[in-house]
Length: 64
Figure 1 (tube, rainbow, N blue to C red):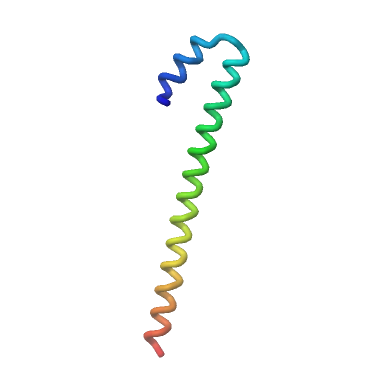
Figure 2 (cartoon, rainbow, N blue to C red):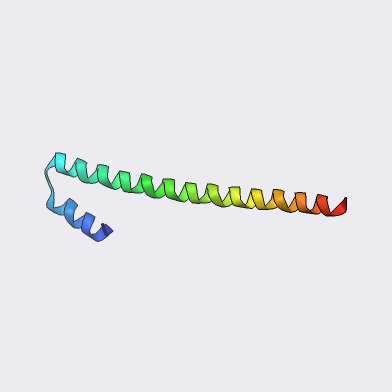
């Protein structure tokens, strides 16, 4: 959902329980986005580490 749509929903839903539902939905969206970002960062770091390690092994192997 677009942020504009969420803002319009908030303005329309003045009922407290419905507002809580919308806010909970927003939190879930944010948390899932954050987890995706962290996971992507972790995978990139892991890929870099593995590439780094394999290049070291290759260099060590070529010396012998």
